[in-house]
Length: 436
Image (cartoon, rainbow, N blue to C red):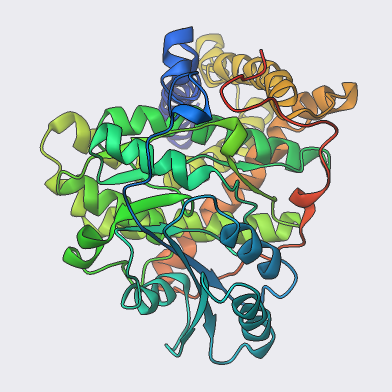
């Protein structure tokens, strides 16, 4: 072999080892909550005593709902939030001054619920979610500021459980569960829903225990005084949820995560693969912005800083994944490599196969928990779609890297069409009795 072939083989070997480590750690964190029945129970808001034992509400809530071109979904979301059983709630719909359709829907909801819903108009240029949130923060009067997306389907009891969680833990931030629901729409929406299932039910609990957490984009509740003290959200960051989570973690804020299937916030997946790519591009680029910003370097321990660097660098690793697959195939057919090196390039396959197996188990658990039917073809989708879905994510990550290098920071919005509000096949069990 010439030196160029040796170089390619060396790069492939290093990338294979790196991807093996990534696959193993990702699988471990995916399954963090299922280490024991006690761990799984500990991921919930509370024990199984029932709703009647919830303490009296002690805090007031300001719920921010930024909405841009969301005429189709916003009205139902505002109605659901206004129906909250918590007695001290204000719902603030944030609409752009250049978006009359969404503003009209928000104002109609305000007329339906004059004691709870109000509208704040955002005149920032250019517009994005963190700027909208900062505009509305000045109008908040509640002790706790909660964030919801315009398409969210929110359980009326959620805020009572969040309030109780603040009281029981003295938390600065409570991150609730978010779940994509339209598992049967397509082969890739199934995988997208399971990603959320693992992320909010397991992985975020791991991050909270390590006191470093990139927060989710909604169903997150923060003490208003803390937000004001830290200047709100970064107006230029494409992943403002991750950024505020990292910043608050770096300053010692206590973050508590809770996933309760009965009160989880329901959402839908992006409507097309193209929308999914744009969404993941934005998230990945936001992670890279937070990595470059360097706030995570203020974390007090080396372990936290290593976890932060690893987590925020994930777009690079996903981009390398997309590069490795075609490079491995070219090498196999074009270069004669030693057997040991060839086997080394296949090293990431083992944890990947195990991950697919765990996804199949999790899909059955998801269907039992949320009362939907597990179809045979969905299991085939999980097997056959594993590699194509990872290539989609890798492409989005590579696109994010390119945009970041070029200095492109425009906001690519995700469209919504209410797919998650289709009637469920059966009602969930009452609160506190999770399906087996």
